[in-house]
Image 1 (cartoon, rainbow, N blue to C red):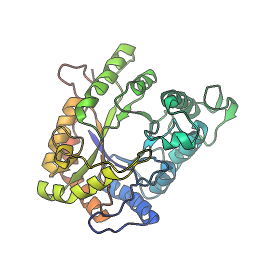
Image 2 (cartoon, rainbow, N blue to C red):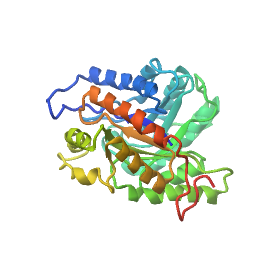
Image 3 (cartoon, rainbow, N blue to C red):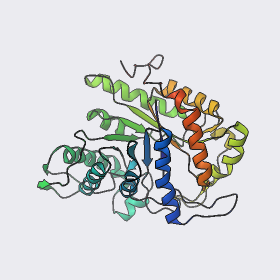
Amino acid sequence: MELGLITFGSLLPDPLTGTTLTQRERLRDVVRAAADAEEFGFAWYTVGEHHFGDRDVIPSPALVLAAVAEHTSTIRLATGTTLVANRDPVLVAEDYHLLDLLSGGRLEMIVGGSFFPEPYAVFDQAPASKAARKRENTELLIRLWTEERVTWQGEFRPPLDDVLLQPRPLQEQPPFWISGGTGLDSVHLAVDHGLPMVLGTTAREPSVFTPVFDTYRTLWHESGRPGPPGRLGAASHVFVAETSQRARTLWEAYINSYLTVKKPGSSGIAAPPDFATYIGDQGPALCGSPAEVVDKLGRLHDAWGHDLHLLAIDVGGIPYAEVRAATELVASDVLPQVGEWGRTEVPGKVAADA
């Protein structure tokens, strides 16, 4: 199983010291963390996209990843998620063709739509149109990636008449992954186009996502597509330290700060989750010693059969020195143990590599 890092560029005061970075300082940390991730041996460095909120300050992953590309050479550069349901797919294609060239063909693009209401309001889009916009724009992106000139007509943007899109990307096959949650619209979209998926598994108990992973594999086999199903990925909020006690003692204030900040579209600040439950056996987060994190990743892998897991470490205003130390510990004590896990047959279910 491959491990990658995912960041949303969250910018919050340190709950222990009250210190807040400037936006420039925070973005520089995001860029230098990518170079560290490559040095430590992670497969992916993933940058999320958010708009109009107080917490997450990266509205354009392409710009940030272009900077990252200049400081790295081998790590895959990913988006998590590119909000194709909310953006003009022609402009998205132009930006990411450029990024693919600048990075030497290292782009991985997870495509989806915003979970928050603000982009739909600001961009004058009906929230109920999310699934239809995601499908239409993804299908157009595939054509824009694979065809030099495109004539097209759809529902949500003006038609294209023999449009020449430049520059051309370096990778011949679209490096697209479909993002998903607990609904099945995205599963059908992924299978219809033979694309891999990454599920947003950071906020709910793992068991609710098991049927989604299973349905993807089942629909793939039922579709008659040759070969095994596409790859499957997941994500978690994570913190690791030398001992369980230190990991929990240090991380609790930071993850609570991250989870309770006022989010776009909310009317107030939510109460923090029960920390012990959040990091427990049935909780979505991973926190503890390297052995504990390996154990929980193993149980998730057994349940889901996935082969990519993205780790969100830098949340809640945690100092970069702590982020780097935790990242290095994952690389030295977790990555070697999970690196040989492939897609596996989940007992009683269709094998992912059947």
